Length: 250
Ligand code: 13P
Image (cartoon, rainbow, N blue to C red; front, side, top):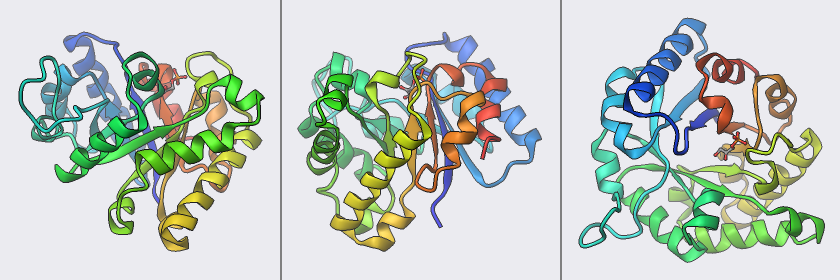
């Protein structure tokens, strides 16, 4: 059976002190809740990882990105090996903000995926269409290309470890959430693509998360869909109680 997962992407928010406080609160509330069957992950900024790792026990740790090169003269970059050495187990790769503002193309993302896997990190690989692509009916082609060019080079065994996050760009940070039917339609399509490439058993065991204006009040109806296995959460992950409301929404 595939896992239920809720991952919080803090993006470029919180200073170190605030980040440690938020992670401690999430750890405390999650542990007190007694929820055992929802893999809960936080993704603070790089510079918080080492310190946040110290306050987490039941909640898992992720980075938001990693370099496309293993090491060397790449000023300002943080390698997958460095991320792994902090205690992080996961790495978000291909977030639409990286694609849009930092030039992360599908081929660059493929290099990041390769390095993350080689260093024992589980990629949380993000895909999603912009509004114009949805409105012009190109949404399924866009998603297919993002999968094919960014991550479908993995072997079936490798792909079996990956988490996919569908984040329609028009829903990110806008307050406009995909309807449960829109989310289900795309998650089902994504699972079909995985099945075509890797077979039904890999597809059935891959967790596909929804992201984009997901919060405690709408998580239940999104997570009720058969192909929605949880969420990748932005703004609502910055408040521990709200985040817990999403973790307990299954
Ligand atoms: P919001 O939840 O703020 O819309 O952000 C979603 C997201 O981009 C998570 O990676």
